Image 1 (spheres, rainbow over the protein chains, first blue to last red):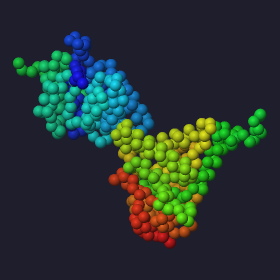
Image 2 (cartoon, rainbow over the protein chains, first blue to last red; image 1 turned 180 degrees about the vertical axis):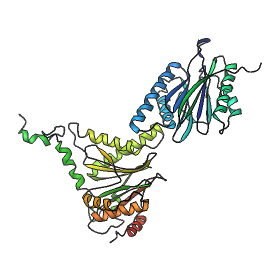
Image 3 (cartoon, chains in turn green, purple; image 1 turned 90 degrees about the vertical axis):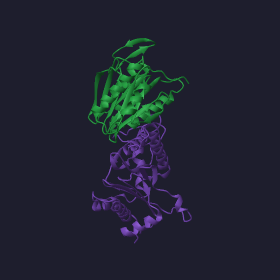
Image 4 (tube, helix red, strand yellow; image 1 turned 120 degrees about the vertical axis):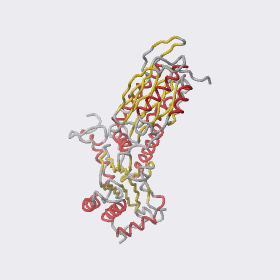
Length: 203
Length: 243
């Protein structure tokens, strides 16, 4: 099977009591830059967000569906859905559509009563819990930076800087990633998203 | 009325309300519970216990084949009073619900979720034509992320959470015993003895490991276990219900 090309870089790390997600802001259609201010981090519930890579339509539809699942779960169970449960549900759904698949790669990050969790979910439905993870065409550059700099005990500010550097590394070398870096911090208090410039790396 | 005298009509099809707004078949079904074997469930914040009596229904029956307390999932157990055949079906259904929840969410199901799914079925069987209600009341005991729970389901599909509850022929005697002796700070051992005491209060004679079944779960462990006959014998002795 041909490797999935997604034209994006997203990354995420798990900290002591937070998950930090990051993504670039470029949308491409072939060699054409279709949009420069895309939000690739989507909020699913008060305590969970996803990063999206792949077909925009599939990602938007799935994020919207996950929002419904999370809301319904809250109503019927009286407690927020756990990150694991949502990732498991998403994996099952993707696998059910294996022969007419959603072209997506998602990072599902959130903080529930068992702490912060990050799941990498692939288009056929495999979902694996990770301490740090990347998706998209810029994965190769970003994972190298993450692997060098990640520590489980890093502060939120340190993690934001690391992710900014990781996505910037992809922006510098991957034509399908670009513009700037969105960074989302998820704690027990909720999700906050900010945009940072791509770091200019030395020539 | 072309199909018979009107006065005869209200307790035939369960989907028909009587002029007083009652569904007589549903109420008749509840009679099965009052005639069922006594079952007791109690809980505190740290543990929950189900104790059920079983009888030698034929002199040569293999008592080991009579099971009154059922594992639904690792973290929840159940028992029932009433029509055993109906109970068996709903127990199996509860097991499927718990398994399916694990399949979808990769986590143990909340106790109330399982109870509600079972009660949804019970409710349907008071409303659809051509069916009769389930003649059982099930009791569920389990521990989940929200704590330790005991739920009892009613015939009509309603359910309540309890600190202590009894059903079956000995309901009133056992309930009276529970109300008199229950304390909220009881440990697992206290609760087992309390449940055995309630069964004894409702029973004709002393309890033996052959005629009583006990299941328990603690908030710490979250695994529903049944006492072996040897363990049951010790608790029966400790509770002083062997005479």
